[in-house]
Image (cartoon, rainbow over all chains, first blue to last red; front, side):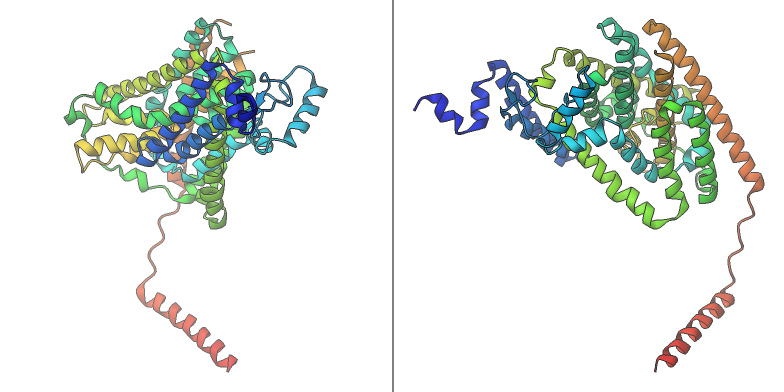
Length: 414
Length: 67
């Protein structure tokens, strides 16, 4: 019995024998990275809700490659999980046949095709996020929130021309730059609308970095706001924060939703989903609230993390198109964080030190992660300082400005 | 279209729409403040007690009727 016959009994090893040494090393590296993500998620350094299913998905998909490629897309190797490229060719009839065929083989293909490819999972996450948002903070301080949110879009605006310098088309560059908005569902949505061919790598890069932002932004804050005295500025509780009742918040949400959909019909599915969550939160219908806060939000987040991990197969990550994306995604989020803190400093300056500049980071609309990061940092330097309400206002407005930018990109880039 | 031009145009449109939204929010808040009814006065203690009495009376009647 020769070595090849022996290894054919163990299909994972057989696939390794059929791969190049670089690919084998990349697979082993990604398996280990998956372990690291799970560990950091468990320790709370990275967002556990996303990182634990994503890390396991990443490790497992790179261990589950075997000699199996029914559509002939990957040089004879494949998995039984999903085929992201199924149905992506130019021939519609062949695409439909391939998709139906692969759906009968790959167990996650129906979830990917019917929830990822059309943005449904992004809408589900937005419904759940909406059900957690209190728009009272935005109603109390709309101008402060909007200024911080606009500054925190620095990465989105600046990354677009930089991405074009890397050879991406205007549509692809716009889809990449939306990573700077730090709004996962919006990134999925924009890449599907503008650059479906880059959907998988952009989605993977975006969520990987959004998880890392949870661990990385505290260092950025400490670097750009070095004074512990400024970081610990206590902001007085604004009586307006608790002033609005649920009926008023509902009226606000309904009118704002209709106006935004009127202005930006391309982003209407996401805007509707977000405001539906807000309206249900304020409606007092407990059954719907429980549905949005529980099964929809956490079910969608789990499948999102798991599917993104499974999309991190070595062939996807080693695609030459993905490497610049890793750099651009990080640059975009870094610039947005810097922009948010610049906005915070400007508000601090004009209010003569009453506004804590750290809340600027919450303009980066990773709800509610960046608001939590801001509160955590401030509380370390001043245990009595509560800035969460202001930070959440900027956070909610950040979602709206990212939706506006995504809508503008989809409208003006033809 | 050139990436820089797209960025400039997007920034201008986003600032306009964002401030429009902020103004709409501010106007809505003013209108809501003007049109909202004053907070209902808390129900005095004796009335609550009476209600509780009514409910307990009904519960007692149901309990008796089941006997």
